[in-house]
Every structure is written in structure tokens, then in C-alpha cells.
Amino acid sequence: MQAKKRTFKHLTKTDRLRIEKWQREGMKPKEIADKLRVHLSTVYRELKRGEYQRLDGDTWEMVSAYSPDIAEERYQANLREKGPELKIGKDHALASYIEDTIIKQDCSPAAVLGYAMMEGRTFKTSVSVATIYSYIKKGLFLRITQVDLPRRGKRKNSYKKVEKKEPARAPAGESIEQRPAEVRNREQFGHWEMDTVYSAKTSSKKALLVLTERKTRWEIIIMIPNRKAETIVKALDALERRYGAVNFRKIFRSITVDNGSEFAMADGIERSAINKPLPRTKVYFCHPYSSWERGSNENQNLMIRRKHPKGTDFAKVTKAEIEATAQWINNYPRRILGYMSSEILFKQCLREIGLAA
Image 1 (cartoon, rainbow, N blue to C red):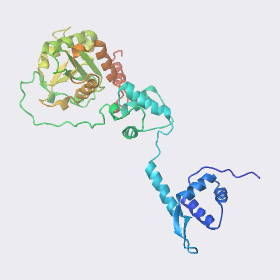
Image 2: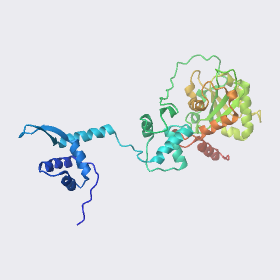
Image 3: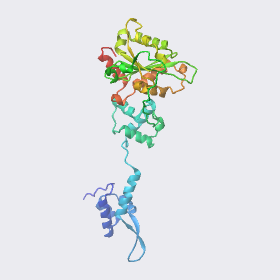
Image 4: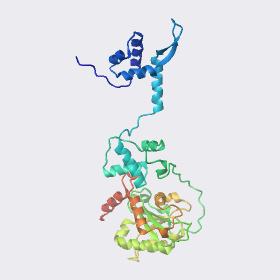
């Protein structure tokens, strides 16, 4: 006759009631284990879990006894103390991928999942962005903590619309209020936001001219020697020559800027350097003290600051380093884009308007 196979398993409340009954009937632990088809050690642990002291009515002495209610209560308490089973479990490949990607790509948990999608990676376990954040906060990863996250665990500050003040100077061109609906709604490709990134803490006047395409969030970063209005025009002239006059007009339909003095030469920004009588783009000016009207620009500037913190002397930053920063931003998976990168969408939009990507 084949012996019954003994297994390790979690006992139920019904099992505990049976143990109490069989023990009162005089059964030995081995016999109980055989009837429950569990390992003998499981029964011994259970008897210890439900052990309590009671008064023997015959001898009037304190003796050890087993209570299924006490055992169940202690079992449930242990489960609560242990916490829920980790979804990531024994999927060491997924855990390593999360750690490696956050460290090497300097990215958020959301972007980790985006990189996995773009790379076509699959794992045994599926986890959400919230779960990854929770595991990091609880210190369950070996090589990453909240310090390694882009915003260091801080919530993004919301923009506050301030009371409109009189501008220090009149806008050099048309107000953002005249901007067409397709620009506001990000429906049409080729509408940009432009800003400068610089350091007021260094003697160097070098800065970055940054342009963000509103639909794809694709970023152009240009090192400039200073923030003079004529320098901005020269930088755009060089950009036009790189793309060609016809293509420039297709790619740069409009540019939205703030009221900084570096953008005062609106006519120069709009006028083609190749075909001077013709316009190459349209410039719109934000309201004073309204940086939220260039939200894409502001978000991209935060990403630039992750690579080049405030106080950076751009005279000491190489062109290769700036190009690497732009490449990192443009290949960063974004939740708002369905975890695709700006690079992919920008090339797709170029093809849609008949330009080679």
C-alpha cells in the first residue's frame, strides 16, 4: 500500500478545530500529522502556536493545553506583521532591471516601465509604477533608495496663476492670446516654446538656448555665448541653414517665448536669414509672470537641471555634454506620450509632413 504523501501547507481554522478534537481523544502528534497529511513539524509548530496554561480540575495544577482560537489569532497576527507578499517575488531579473535602469538612465519608475516597453522586454512578474515607488520607499531594493529618484520623492509644485502686472516693457510681437487653437491644443506638429537656461552665480555669460516642440516634447539645446537678442537671432539663423528655408518653415511653424529682453528682436526671429523678404516662423509672447504658459519648456528645463544643476558654469560644459543631455531627454520614455520617447514621435511627425527622419 502506497504511503500518503505528506506536504507543507498552511493550516485552516477547520484544521485547528480537528487538532483540538483529536488531541482530546488522545492522539499523538504523528497520528494527527498522518490524518491531516502534513509534515510532523507542522503539527508541532501548530501546538506551540496555540499553547496556553489552564487549571486542571482534577489535580488543581496548571497544565499546558491547545486552543484553536488562540492559534488562529496568533497566525493572523503574524500575517499582518509580515505584510503582503511582494509582487516582485523571486523575479530577480525584474528587480535588477529596475535598479540598473534607474541608476544608469537617471529616470523615474514610470520611465523604467517605458524603457522596458520600448526595448520589448518581458518579465515573469508585472508591477505598477505605484508598486515600484512603494518598494523603493520601504527600502526593499538593495541598490536604490528615494535619493536616487529624479524628484527625490518630492511632489511636483503646481503652477499658480498670479495677478497680472504691467510688463516692464511692451511685448515685441503678438500676444499668446492670438495663438490659434491648434497650437494651444497641441494638435498640429511644428509649434515650439523657447527659453534660455543660464546661471546667475557665475561670471560666465554662456547660456543654453532651448526649444521644445509642443506636440512631441522634442528638445533642441544650443550653446550660446550670451543672452543678447542678436545672439538669439544668430542661433536661429544657423538652425535655419541646417534645415533649409523650406523645411524650417514646415518644422517651426510658431515659437512661443516669454517677455525676456533676449527675445526682444521678434522681427529678426521671424524673418528668414536665407530668403530675407519672407517670414520663417511666427512668434507669440506669453503674459508677464506666466511661466506656466510655456509648461513644456519649464518641464524640460527641470530635466536639463538634473544634468546641469543651478550654478553650473556653462563655460566649463562641452558641446558633447550638451548633445548628450539633449539625446537623453529625447529618448526618455514619457507617460504622457504613452511611454514612447520624443525621438520616436518627432521622427514620425517628420515623415507625416514629407521629410526624411
